[in-house]
Image: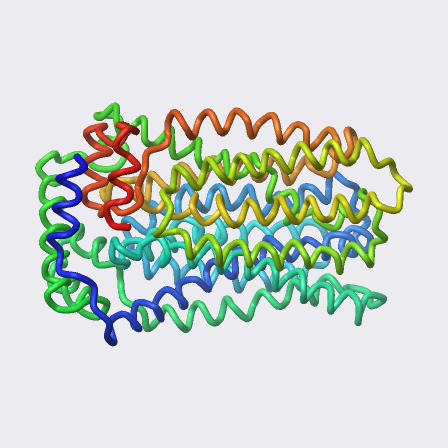
Length: 487
C-alpha cells in the first residue's frame, strides 16, 4: 500500500505558485467565516451568561437549558447538514447556514424572555452544527493533497479566533457597560456581522469540484479546478476523481445502504463517532462556555474572571496557529496521542492543585488559571484542528456528508450534555472532581486512538476512499510511512 500510494500521489503534476493558489486562499478565508461564527456564537455565552441569568431570573438548570439548547440543535444541524450538502451542494448549504446565523441572532437579541431566547439559540445551533460539518468538507474537497491539512485546518483556527473575539469583546462591553441592563444583548448582537460577511462572500465562491463530479457536472468541476490549480494539475485530479466516482456508481450503493453493505464502512463510521466524542469528552467546551464560572470557583472575582478568561482565548489562537503549521508535517495519529497525553496530564494537575490549594489561598486562582490555559493550549495545538481535518478526510465521497454528519452529531450531543450539566457538576463535586473525571476519560481515549484510528495525512481523498472501503487503512504498521509520503 505504501508504494502504490506514493506512486499515485507523486504521479500528479506538482503544485505551482500563481493566481490559483491565491484564489484557493481567498476561498478558505471566506468559507472560514462559518468557523468564526461557530466560535463566536459558542464563546459569547462565556461572559454573557452571568448577566443574562441575573436579568431573566434563571436558575442553574434553566441557564444550562439556554446554553445547551444551541448545542443540542447543533447536533441536529450536524446530522442533517451533511446530507443537505450532499443533495444540494456545499456552497448553497453554507449560504443557508449564514441566513440561519443572522435570524437566530435577531431572536436572541430581541428576546423578551426564556422561550424566545431558547428559540434563537436553537436557530443558531442548527447553523453552528451544519457549518461544523459542511465547511471542513468543502475546504478538504477544494484543497490539494499536499496542503489539505493546513487549508482545512483554517476553519478550526477561525473557530478559536471567534471564541477569542467573543471573550475580548465581552470583556470590553462588560467593563464599559457592565451596569447597563441588557448588556448581554449587546454581546450577542455582534454575531450578526460575520453572518452577513459569510453570506455575501459565499455568493462569489465556487462549488466543490468533487461534489460536481458526483452529480455528473464534470465540465463545471474542471472549470472550478482550473481556478485553484494549474491546468495540467486540474486535468490530472479530475481524472482521478472521475475514476473513483465511476467505481462507486458501479456498486450502485450510496449513503446508508453503502454503509450497511460493507463492514469496513460501518467500522469507519463508528471510529469517526468515537473521535468526535473523544474531542468533546476532554471537557474543552466546558472551559469555553463556562470559563468565567470556573475561574470564579478558582478564586477570582467576577470582573477579574471575565478579563482573565481572555488568556484562554489568546492561547487557543496561538495553539491553533501552531497546529496549522504542523498539520501537513506531523501524522494525525501522532498528533492525537500527543494531544490526549497533554490534556489528560493537565486534567490531573488541575484536580490535584484544587485539592492542595484550598479556597482562600492567594496562589489558588493563579495556579488554576495557568493550568486551565495550559489545558486549552494543549487542546488547540494538538487535538482540535487535527480532529476536524481528520473527520473531513476519512469518509468516502458517496457518504462523506452523511458520515461526518453522523460522527459530529454524536460529538455535539456529548458537548450538549456537558453544557447542560457542567454548572451542576461543578456545584456538586467542585473543580477537583470534575477534572479528575475528565482525566479518567482521557486515558480511555488514548487507548481508543492507538488501537482504532487510521492515518490520513499525505494520502489523496480518492486513495483514502479505497483504503477505507477495503479495510487496508487499519494496517497501522505502515500508517506512519504512508502518512509521511507527502511530507
